[in-house]
Amino acid sequence: MLKVKNKRMLMKKGAALVLASVLFVSSSKVAYADGTESYISSIEEGLKANDFSKVTNNILKDIVNTTNSKIALSDIDIALKSDSNNDHFIAQGISAFAQEQKKIKFKDAYEMSQYDPYLYINYDIDEISVFDNLTGKISSLPRQICLLTKITDFGSYSLYELHANTPCYVITDASGKILTYSGGSNYYDLNSKNKYAVSFKEFLKSNGYVYDENYSYLDLFEGFTFDFSEHMCQYTPSSNYKISDVLVIDVETPVTTGSNMSQDYYFIKYVCPNLFIEGENIYKDVENTNAKITVDEENTLSYYDAYNDTSIYDIDMRYVGEGYPSSSALVRLKDFAEEKDFKIGFSVSDYELKEFSEYVNPKNKTLGITCK
Image: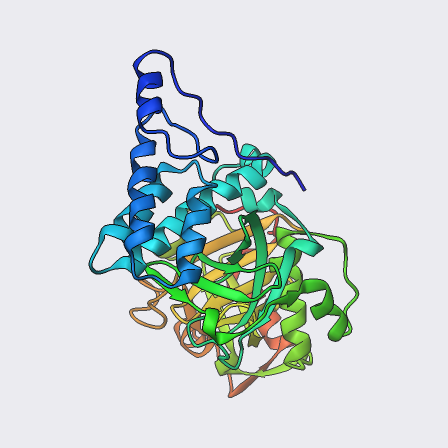
């Protein structure tokens, strides 16, 4: 795992040196050439006068002493000055700090792809933690098994990315106690909850799983989470399904025009809820069992197949069954069969679905095109 220490910007010569002598704040901070020192000075005053909890205050202080992000400093400064909406700006400040630190920690991955660095990120198992919140032990957190990957240690704290439907961040102390959670515009001080994240290694051991020392992003979130969810939900493969458990991906609709999928229609069957993302379900492709497929509550679909290098990410399919086929990319099997004049009962077998697939798809096409 590549680790890069923070580098402070050096002051330019001339007038900036004079300004630095006037705005000198402490031996632990650096004078900036872009006016950032004014934020630091303002923040120091705000930290002395605000009504935040001691934990929040100390976390903000350590972020200020660590970050080079002017955006993070600006958001924290606004939070300290604002009479309302403080949580929004604290959350935004932590997010900016997290984005800065991720680009430092995973520098090589970002150099490979600014657009999708996750494809090149690798995690050391000792930098992954878990908090099982399926039963809502902490109401502010998503109701899921929260996988936390460490971004950085700063001051007395650790900053983790909580992998959920939206970018979220958790801050813990050295013992793993969950102190704060922030996502979007929401910030929560959770110190009083007295809840602890556990190491990923211990989590796997307790559930009878053999662990690896390192995990790629895809191994973790497009592999382990699927397998573990199936295991915990006691999923058993079946050759016969209720038709309500089968959906059809129609890549010929305007919603997915240009996706370049190799078939026109994909038949996917419900497996179980994704225990690691609240409100998301796991599906399997009837014909391509390698594919990892999820559909969330808003019918946003992701389809990933590492073996055949085929993927669709976050395709908006909210118009299920409405105005089919002109406005829908994800449709119920019953509606699709009626449109294609294909007789179908209350249940359907793998054999029937494969037969139906051959009926509606062009011949001699195989999966093998990456879709962006």
